[in-house]
Length: 234
Image (cartoon, rainbow, N blue to C red):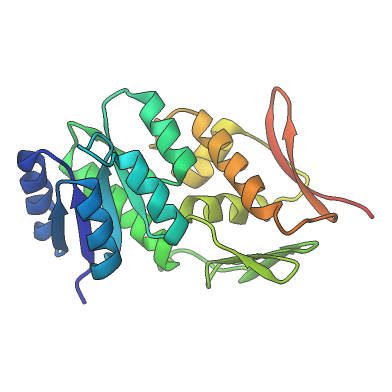
């Protein structure tokens, strides 16, 4: 079954270029040029992922991203101008899973899209060995194969990157990780984005997981170093 990708950009040339790249890789491509039509199409056609330009007429890409994140955890890759760190950070803060810089390289675009899709579908490569399917730290539980995270039995909806981050840290309770180490582990060694991306995702994790309350574990900031997931003794 071919996966459907929604591409949103107000530049028809970019839309056609992205369509050609994606069709060549076997995807079904839907294109939209406004934020309003993108939201309608996403709700009706249920694409597997969205490539979303931020600078759209009318409803901006930020607005679209914000609304989609209220409704679902569909993988969203934002399209940003090269070097525009602010757009990237804000995009991640609103729930984007990754970004593609303009002008983009076709191979990198396809690789990033496929990686996000694999994470969203919980796929594992043949070389990956599953040591434990379910990891627990107090009331926090992460089911890696099912791609589910729960606190005290209540499931919490996370974006693919948020899930990867907590799934990585729960394997090493009590260990401090620098932002660079977390970037390498979750985003990959070839990721050259700003380390503030980690701060944004940690903050979003806290906002989502704190809703349930968790007296027996804590996602701590180690000032000047990074972050640590700790078990709390009651």
